[in-house]
Length: 251
Ligand SMILES: C[S@@+](CC[C@H](N)C(=O)[O-])C[C@H]1O[C@@H](n2cnc3c(N)ncnc32)[C@H](O)[C@@H]1O
Image: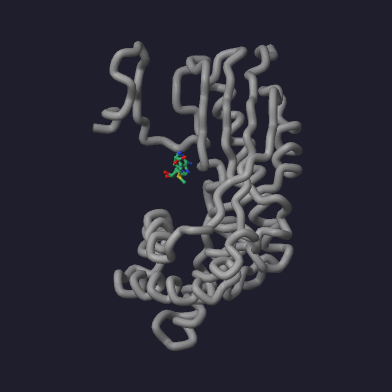
């Protein structure tokens, strides 16, 4: 039951919609409160240039922009800004004038520090495991080159600029919150949590359960020797809280 944990003795309408939040999804001006948690770091698509071998942004041998050269970071960042524009335009359709949006956005303190961030360091380790597997002939190097994860972690400054560019919502509040560290989470549990989120992406691209099992097996070994495991306090998630209010309509 999708709504079995919702409070039973209150009046509200519940709906589950098989649609992307980058499009309008509800009748015009029908929402008064919106909440999004830990989802607006998912890109709508992978920037094309990062898999184009003739582009400066070709992300060869990596599966994320962390530790990649700046053209790759730029391509991800541009896609992220474009996606925010779509999200805000779509919500401007759905939300009534005066309606509020409370958003929790996974972030990093500064973009150049992404390798010191929990999820981003994991992506580097996964990429290294895949490259090891390519060197051993288990998968092809081109398969690694053509695979990229569509997650972008902005820094608060970048998010503020994006919010300030929008004309349909006013910024009521913005705050940087401390997120999780990997401290105290056993490796097996950590690998399982990550598997829940990433397995589908790996399976769709590499196509074989054995390859996916091998990637996670290698991850759980490699992470033990990484700073992520050895200095867990230095690897944190940051979350930016943003409260937006729908402005009056402009005719
Ligand atoms: C990390 S989970 C967060 C789930 C939950 N909100 C929470 O805070 O625990 C991110 C969720 O966003 C969903 N998601 C990503 N892109 C989306 C999109 N364009 N439209 C709708 N849902 C999306 C994913 O399918 C995933 O379930």
